Image: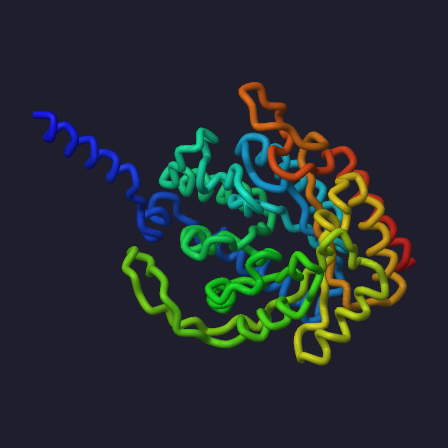
Length: 352
């Protein structure tokens, strides 16, 4: 009798680990033809910026990671309204990160642990991640996400207009193969020690086709033939306590990109080592970067900000503060709105 109960418990545990296939999740939460067309157009807008055919300034802004769908949608509605007001000068893309890279350990993001109870219910996490990305897309916003786990992206990549490869994974061969298969532009960060060589190597590797191991839409382990991604660029995020958003660092990066036949475009991450982990500094860095752009540096594609409704960060607890990050500290909405409005006015004034 005991062995029967144990077998039943083991079966229940096994069932809990089963995930839907990418096709099953997409069929459950489908992308409409209208939204699919919108996302494709938004990807092409970013490609045009990358190729110098659009002179707007790109700003990727939003929560460090989505931990509360209601707060993320609240933030998204505010951002969508502002984006419409400034879209002649700024192309605003919302950070919609559902995976969180960890240096050691901690909460890994909505896709992995949406209940934040440590049990790792990814079936629920992937469902909730796709659902909130669909809702944010319906607001008219282009979405950005970090491509952290190659298999997670197979559930979500049709909703993403721009993706990032993090500083810790730019040297990873599976991630380079993933980028070569993604249907959107991708920014690749310099490594955590500040070097840009690994990102440049990743751009070269990702531009070519690969034969790689993966899963198809029906969950079958398969050889995936990637086509190569020509739409990659460098993200400067500082490293080892050093910044790289100043004119000399950007000039050096652009010269290295030119020498290696890569897109001569850089996006400045105003957070992380560039802000020396001081989230308020993102505002002065953003102004400094835009001033360089206005001074004639056309190699600056744009910037990235970590921003949420409430400023700072909190511990993940039973009494959460609505709209405040549980991962990296973020700018609050009021400062974000004031900053983006000031950058917009600065760009408009320059054209007068």
